[in-house]
Length: 237
Image 1 (cartoon, rainbow, N blue to C red):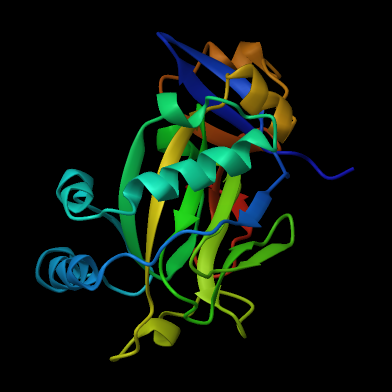
Image 2 (cartoon, rainbow, N blue to C red):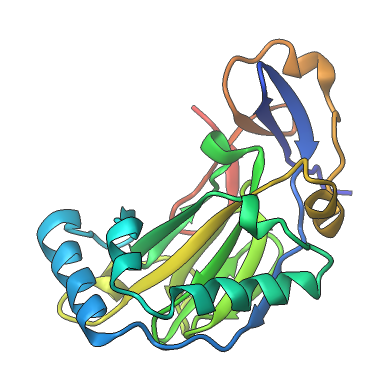
């Protein structure tokens, strides 16, 4: 059996270890298109402030957006209702949320900063011919308005061209409209329902946990990183 990655993450003042889930939960919910004046505001912000390069993922100001977004509550209700069908009642209301923009996304994992979390993403843009790809698990999810996904932050993923097998910056260059806007919630991995839904096993390597002072993912006994073009695991420098 192939070696499985282990995520080491902060739990209060100590580092714990856990498995990295291969489970990706996805669906489509009915959410209204953001109003034109709000999408125009996002475009200005992306152009003037974020300056997104191919593969970049950056935050947009959510409080300002909510003030001009009558359908925000419908988005939250739709995701919350979908999560209830998965046995994840009441998790969303207690979770931090952010508004994000990406011009594609290079392969990466997020467990060096969010190892104690799973992500729940709701995509708000129309279909731009892009997929959310998890190369290790084989999941490939078409991104359209209302696409919702829950996944382990330690699982490598990217936003790539639908016809592509990897991330290529040239696919996101020029004047092509390839920006994806999405809401992302941080779901505590130690929440009993979240851990159960993703099949997380805890405290796999307490000895190594005692030696670490930051969040990491290890594979085959060494710290691991992800190739930004292919999503393959490799040994960190």
